[in-house]
Image (tube, rainbow, N blue to C red; front, side):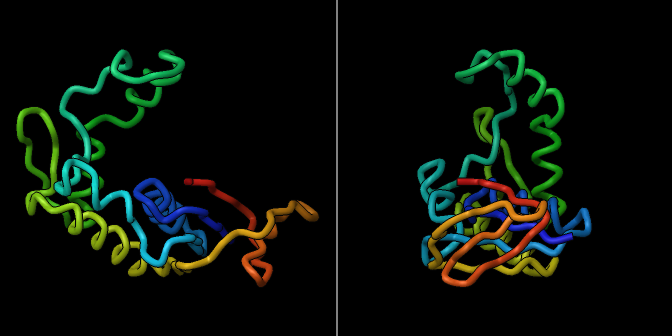
Length: 154
């Protein structure tokens, strides 16, 4: 099973890790020259990973959908995920940060953990087209890449 993830931000890297853990061969495509560019500016450079209190009324959109997501994946689950990949967390005023208090830590650990799982990361690539042909996805980045699953994390 092959999976392509488009976008190497926090959600793209986490999706790539989840897909690789599920046994898929994963390639991540990013248009920037580095992964996690926006991670580096979150929490004023400290990377607010999550909050201790997550409630559906703190988000915009369909509150019933948001509630289902928050029930399925709690702040404790998020902390456990990051601690399992080697990032210790700390709580400060209800906000959860990496214990290093550096967003760079999160970016590096996500990238390194994904690569340890065999995830291929292609930076500096633009998507020219995406087609579905015979039940497969074909992503053109100058060369065609074929996959069974496509995750858009942009």
